[in-house]
Image (cartoon, rainbow, N blue to C red; front, side):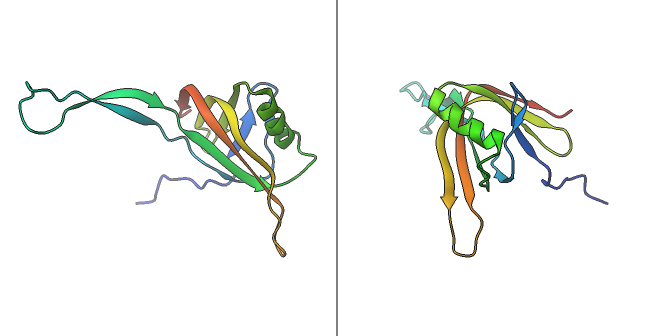
Length: 138
């Protein structure tokens, strides 16, 4: 049986407002949802095993890396977004048209992450997801 999976090539990250694509990306980290736990064990618990309930959910972070292109308007927008200190809506779209839409704040930005002797100039940025991210498979 053939796989139903897809390759990641052509995945994009855009600023939803203004439709600015962050260009020349080579890596786009996925959203990882995690939940805190709250211990609820008491003297009335039915066993000696700790009991927990789910706490607050964290939307995680999205880390991106790419070829540093000073004239790329999407890459420039990341710096502007960091300087503004506010949340912006972003969309990660995968080749099968599924996507994550989320509000994020920039927590890290490197205009040039590395300048290796025989390498390309790379940039990196990290977005902290704030609020509820929306997953769509359409």
